[in-house]
Length: 113
Image 1 (spheres, helix red, strand yellow):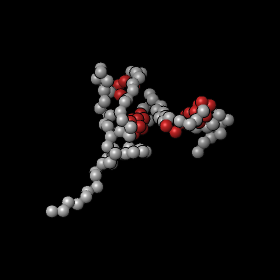
Image 2: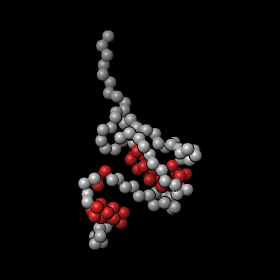
Image 3: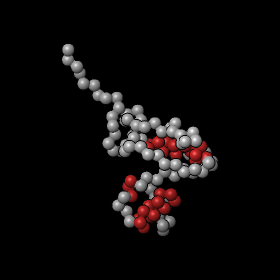
Image 4: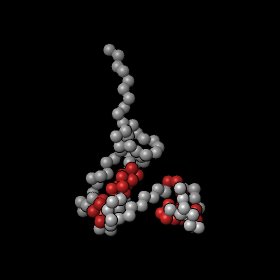
């Protein structure tokens, strides 16, 4: 009997955005600390946290979705910064990039986009 190749339902993403229903990823929605506090609780308490997981496992995707979940909450102004594109910037270029992205204008007040 001949077996036919079937495309895998999920793949290991090697670059770019991890799409949960298409890529293998780590579910971070239910992650808690040693005090059994989820990420939202830690943020509500003003606590810091770090997430360690393998490359391309969905950390950035999780934070992107988490920030989107806070957009309508008047207590928070979520700002998602990715430093991956800043690896080759000088210190001055790095801070100018952050300023432009947060304020929507460069140091001279020129709008972006």
